[in-house]
Image (tube, rainbow, N blue to C red; front, top):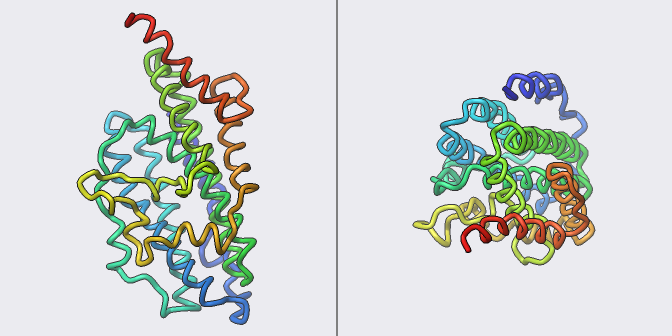
Length: 285
């Protein structure tokens, strides 16, 4: 099992909200209303770990190891929401999200292939790590800068944990699962490493997940300001092509390691993805 090792490793680096956040360094003159509003939106977005966990547990009922890991992931992701809310409680209580605003992002996600979802969230953690690192540079107030640094490190560790389960699917669960995993990982990898070609911010909270609720079936659509994410990325923290290239490079690097072959570009990964279907097509013919 992977979960016991992950629990120990994540427990060893877990931060304490009271002791490890420099609350006494707050400088009111360095926090703008615009910045504070984005903190509220991120606090609500992080609350969406709740429906995501419900989805993971439902779609991985046959995998107790991974489901147990969700206890750690869920705790740490909800803690991200909590520390952002705590920041607002201390320094901008007028912007604290209401329980109604938080509950609105809890809705049911349609069932989806577990391996594709695993890869989607692996890429999502990589992307969120870079978003928060970029946000830390945009912010000027020292306490929120420290918070974004702290939770960005968590997101990177979560990506590493998901990677452990991806490697297990490729190595330890038989040839059929390995082939399914390769097809799922490369399919989602091509999508998530191609974000610079799309106008939409590619992250699990910004993707459609419930056909019956379409088009209001993304986490972002449930926020008080549904269009805030693109504005935050493009007009505020300026998550530009340089940052996007960093995300794409990390995804391609990890796909290269997992598949044991080099992918310098998204096109390389896409060609490999297409090659995986070739044997099945040949047999069908």
